[in-house]
Amino acid sequence: MEALSPFELEVARLLVETLHLEDIHPEHIAPEEPLFNDGLGLDSIDALELALAISKTYGFQLRSDDQQNLQVFASLRTLSAHIALNRAR
Amino acid sequence: MNRPWTQLPERSNTLALWLIRWIALRLGRLAGRALLYPITLYFLLTTGEARRGSQQFLRRALAREPNWRDQFRHMHCFAATILDRVYFLTGRLEHFAMTIHGSQSILDQAESGRGCILLGSHLGSFEALRGLGVHQRQLPIRMLMNTAHNPMMSQLLDVLNPELAQGIIPVGGPETLLKVSESVEQGCLVGVLGDRVAPGEKAVACRFFGQQVDFPTAPIIMAALTGCPVILCFGLYRGGHCYEVHFERLAERVVLDRRCRQEQVAVWVQRYVDRLEHYTRAAPYNWFNFYDYWQDAPLVDRARVKVRRPQRFARQLEMGWQGLWTLLLSNMLLLVTLGLSGLWPLRRVWRTARDTPCQVVAGDWVIVLGMRLQHNQVSRDYACRLERAVVLYRADPQRRILLVGGQTGCRDSEAARGREYLLARGLPAEALVVEEQSLHTLDNLRHARQLLEKYQTPSLVLVTSRYHLARSEALAQGLGLCPVLCAAEERLRLDLLTVWRLVVETAYLHWYEVYQRWAHWIGHRHSPAEIR
Image (cartoon, rainbow over the protein chains, first blue to last red):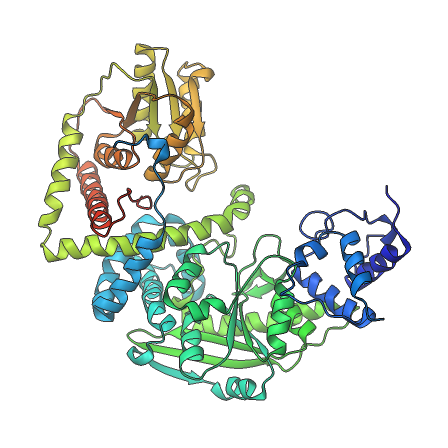
């Protein structure tokens, strides 16, 4: 399996903790795997929880009218890249 | 038809939508309501699954075996609220007497500038509330709606009230709930119906009418995450022009503890379900979940039903809508001409049934129209059609036989049982092709057309029961197919059941003719694609 970068691992930990994914180890999430529907099987409630956690931890808001949302939420890798780009802290 | 049939476009919904608006707004509510009776009867006679759903519910709510009058009343109530929806969505509230209970809670909420979750259900008419919100009190209501599963409703909304349509938050995609949360922050009242679980949605089992049923957890979790109040609302139809809207505050704030979140959510959802049961008991005929809600069907069937339910339901609703508004016109014509306009289709049904031969020489493909199974077995009439296919095949073994007919209420599809029947009669498997998706005659023919598309101008033989021939021919011609007809029975035998079937077929054909002329008249020159 492909290894996670340190920041991806940090985001993976946040994801597992926020969404109480007890049976999943952050290190075992495949970075390119889809987060929603297939793959991890998250839903839009999880997305909201994740968005709240991201805003608390990294100090920026994900907006619903962002055209890139589908891309941002596509995988752990794209999400991490988006956070790295926009984080305020 | 000049164009090859594969290139004919399928008709869109626009015509039916236009009809809905025209009848409701031009002819007026009184005329519309007079027509509800034949329509309700039509529903009652043709939608088996909905009727069973109604029966199962009424048995619980009335605590006795429901009779046909109860079921008629149930469906009539549903049809009436559908008609009124047009008025609500266009803000014409002057037709109605509305009693509002607990309005203070909602007004306070709107004034506070804080948003909330407006938790409703398929009990009665949520539309009543929407009408109220937009046109009387200027309540900023936005609806969370599954537009993909309910294309007809969203299109209707687009036609009737584009402004309201803008306010819909479509379900699907990661950003759905982000949108909800932003709307709440902006002070919107976000409406959501909490009594149906979408496929793949998280749910919790609650006690409802003494039995465990799954309810979605999303509305409560939404409220917890956005930190806003939850207000319940029920728009009950009380007959005539009376509606009763109830508002109740369920929670000022839903706080969930991480460790026992699941249990707490279950408690909150159960509180909602308790109130739902309360209002359902108060107005039982307002219950508009016409399917196997408590999953009473035997376990064997359930697995299939469960998977197919949402699609089936959406489809039924859509058929219902289409049926409703195209049937209106046909009925009106029959009423106005005192039934005389039915004579012509009656003549055609009768003559085709009487005169069609049962020996056919030409034709590479034999299409056998499926028929509803009885206790998962081939019925007598269907067996007759299949026997005719056997004869045709033996006369020319080069022929191939196409069996069409999906799952209509039984475990197996019509086509699959038909195939077994023919195999048992000694026909080789390679001569048989099955199509198992279609649910009614028009669907049968449409799928047959699709399947046969790849063959160069195939010559077709259409086999069906004598009483069914005229309509099948008309529908096939409408789709650009020109089959040779072949009757299943040797000759037409007139017993009571056949006479009744000829009458029903006449009604169908009348409806179809009316629709076609109407479509032609207003410029949609393609054949109607939505009539059964």
